[in-house]
Length: 549
Ligand SMILES: [Zn+2]
Ligand SMILES: [Zn+2]
Image (tube, rainbow, N blue to C red):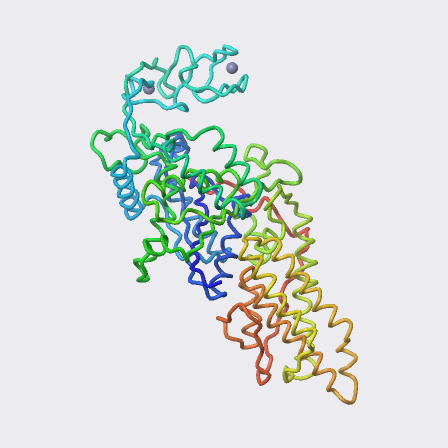
């Protein structure tokens, strides 16, 4: 496959620390990016923090700080988390940059020129005391169903979903003053007009998507596409490029979803390639990697927006969506106190081990369950007992008995063919976005290698007078180690580097069988993976909210 690859990792919302659900949804993006670069494809992998919107302003108001303080704090934390987890973004940015603001404002002007915008004035709740329009979460009133005091979006007592117009005796949540109705002008995106284009796009691309992505999109399309407000009465967000909206900011759905494109364009400027050309090139294949709750933004709204900007821009092709991670069989939530953050994982485990577990146990097609027992047992079985053991028992033996000497290359046909087959099969799975099946297939390879070792018993061959058989078997094992590192590199880059350093293999090897240099003398062979003792794991470590104001 000689295509150009554009990978968009979902933009996490900068209002709380990342947890294992985010991690499971985002990790496949990095595996794909590392694989495609290795495969020789020109690859662009971007993401960033989503920093605008009401949840951040509501929290900022509670804490008495500027929303920027919150967004910046979590953006910095996310950036560090991704670095610690070895994510290889070509750009990890955020929606607060001038570059991004200018980009989305320019796109809005283009959408306006193409006649997909209109303004509409409607009566909305206004607080005369605070002198501002109050949105659903900022207004309280009497629930029409049960008579309790309810918020503008939901009654917490009878759990009915509401809109502010359902409430009686409406008051501003902040100051308690009764609200009045006042006309308010908003800008709308005419998504309804794009329904035929989005439907056609869906029919053309859905075959490669997972069932949930197809179902969610179908459900959304069936309900009929409704026009969406571009503006909000808010002072936190990107200003509009048109007159008459000074008291408004862009709605976060519009600003954030175009982040892939502002980030990609910036990389293009920095590295001297034409991004606008790349996203229109029929030879470019795009992968969008995200969780279930984000699907329709990528399969309906983004395709609609792109179509309204320029029909020739490639719409999202491969939708790599996933379900949820549950905790010991329960839904994870902050209120239940069972949310495991990335900070907690990193305080306890090695990044390769975290990456391995959350790809092997990825909720690709159904919810997965995280439990500490499972994590520890997978680490100890697959990484210590499988991958690590195969590497160490061969290389440490050569160091101990043969002063680190490596054998001449002398491959068995069976080994050569297994290695070739593994590259082909795993490569094909990764092209389809199937990272979980790919890593499962790689463990078959590890088991093949360990079986080969056990059946050929090099430790007894080493005692024979004629060492030819020992060197032949060991050659096959070292060859399989070199390729194990290379095959696992997109998944566990740290250990790949360790093995390549020991064998003095070029770090930039391609996705194809590689050999080793028999003239190299092994030194500094250390244990690849340490066994985890479950008693030393503390899932309360670094679990507190990191925002301190
Ligand atoms: Zn008020
Ligand atoms: Zn109620």
